[in-house]
Image: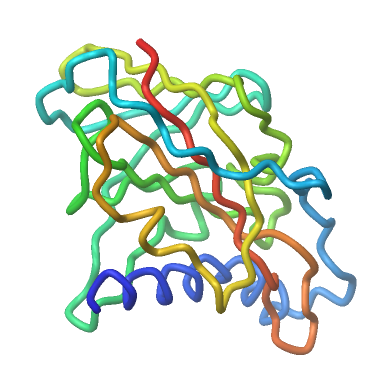
Length: 204
């Protein structure tokens, strides 16, 4: 039940960028972020890891060469009500690592979240929907190691259908989940209608 609550609140809080855009009185709609292929890039269950898991270490930077992302990571957690924190909107170039979960390189799914936009324009994960299977994601850690992941799939989910188990659930591989908002911007609700989720598995 707690995992479900985190998933639902994650979906809600990742829409903060859209809410702020409306709240500050911007009259025009924000640019629509790139989306996964219409045909879908379904998540594939990762095979058992061929590399041993790494010990826990705090991640400090995420790099995604295909979309030109090189961003610092800050720790985020859940508050007393179970709501997931996100990086502050006044730092749109920063992504957040969900600290209570796995660290990148540990067995399980490490979760990294980022805004799609901000009052100033596109944010750190604006182009997340451009990723395709085989693209790489690099996570630099505080212990001076760099963990490399390969994208398995990219999907967009309606916010009332967030895949909590696939994102937070335990797995037999060293996984990574990147999450942001996506889809159409609903001006009446002041938020994007979907979430984009990237599924990736450690390769080095």
